Image (tube, rainbow, N blue to C red):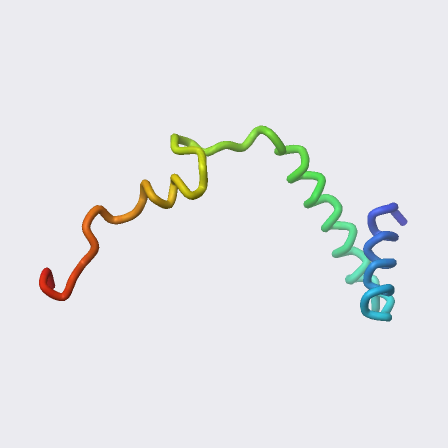
Length: 73
């Protein structure tokens, strides 16, 4: 078993007092390791398509210019 799977099982056992119940659960834990590795491989390569690069600035940029009021409806 891979080190990651052993760590996941150990954490589950420590926090919840249970062991993985079956082979599908073990397989899903192994797939989780692959998913994490895929995201780690993308680290540093993902960016916003356009400025502003900050999340808060992006929210402000997409805000409607004039909010609706009862009078404008």
